[in-house]
Length: 475
Image 1 (cartoon, rainbow, N blue to C red):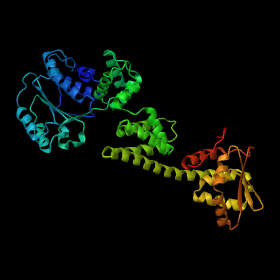
Image 2 (tube, one colour):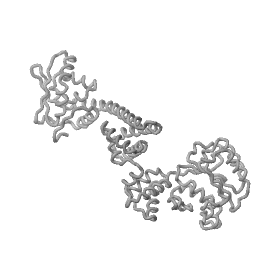
Image 3 (cartoon, one colour):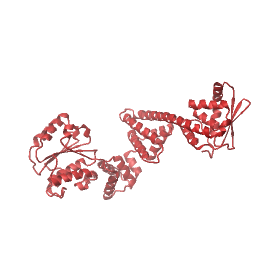
Image 4 (cartoon, helix red, strand yellow):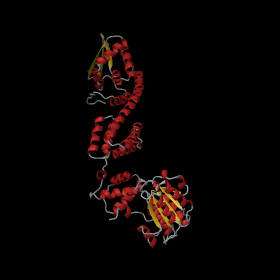
C-alpha cells in the first residue's frame, strides 16, 4: 500500500500547498524561457523542495506544457513521476557526498539529453558534500553546459559555501501555515474515509512544525491504530505526548514554587516512559501560547521560565542521566525564580506599606517602640511578621504590647503567636526596653484591609511559605 505523502504528492505547481512566491517565480521562468542554470531550494524538511524540483523538471521536459505547468499525462511526465526518466537524475548527498560522485556528474554533464529537452540534476541535502566535492561542483556551475539544470536542495543553507550560493538563484521554502495544513489534512482524511476531530488535526499540525510530509506520516500512523474516531487523546497516546492538563499543572507548580507537585508529575513522566525532551518542548509551546494572550498577567515570569527551559532542554538532550539533569535543573530554576520574585516583592511591599502608613490614621496609636521594631523588620526583609504587625490593632498596658486581630486577619495572629520570643528579643535589642507581646484574636471585625496591600499579602504567602490558617469567608 502506497504511503499517504507519496500518494498525494503534488504533480503540478497548482497542487503544491503554500510556497506561492516560489511557484510564481518558477512558473514565470518556464513561461518566459528564462530558467536559471542552477537553483538552490532552501528550507525546512517536508515543505515541498524536492516536489517542486520534480515539477520543474517535468515542466521543462513536458511534451504538452500548459501555461508553464506540466500536463502530467504525456510519456515524459509519467516517466519522471515513475523515476524512470533518464534525463532527471536525483542524488542524495547525505550518502553520496564525496568528490568521486561529483566528478561522475561533471564527466556526464556535457552529454546531450537523451529523452527530453533538459537534463536536470536534483541533489538533495547538498550541504553535506565534502569540501572537495563542493570545489568540483563549483567548476561545473561556473561553466554550465546548455540545456542542463542543477536544483540543489538543502535544509541548512548556512553550511553551503558562499561561492556556490553566488552562482545559483536561491529560493526560500517557508514552513507551511497551519490553516493550509489543516485544510489539506482534512481533505485527505475525508478521501481516505478517516474520522478525525478538528482538535486532533490541529495537534498533528502543531507537532509537524510546518512540515506537511511529517503531518501526513503522523495522520497515517494514528489511523493505523484502528480507532473508531480520533481525538486529541488518541493522538497524544500514539505520539507519546504529555496531556495538556498535566503540562498546565507542571507550569503552575513552577510558578507557585510547589516542589511536591513538580516531583509528582516528574515521576509520572519518567515512569510512563515519556520523553523529557518532548515534555519540555511542549511546555515551552504552552508558555508561548499563554504569552500570546493579551490578558496574561505573568508575562515577565513566563518569559524567564521559557528561556531557562530552553537552556535546560539542551543539557537534558545530551545527558546520559536525563532524569537527574531534568529534576535538578527544574529545582534550580524554581529557586532562581523565587529569589527574583522575593526581591521584586520586597520593593512592592515597601511601596505599598508606605502608602498605607500615610493613609491609615490609626497607625498613630502604635507605640513608638513598636514603630521602631516595624521599621527594622521592613528594612531587614522579615515581611511576614512586619505585615502581621501592620494589620494589628495595638495597645499598651503595664509593660505589655497587646496586638488585637479579628476576621479576616487570623493568619497574622498565628504568625505573631509563633514568633513571640523573636519579637520580644528584637524589641529589647532595638529599644533597650523589656516588653511582653500578647496577641489576641476576636470575632469582631476591626477594620477593612486596604486593597493594594491585600494583593501584596497574597504574593507574600506564595513566596514565604509557612503555617497558614484560613477560616471560612477569609479573602
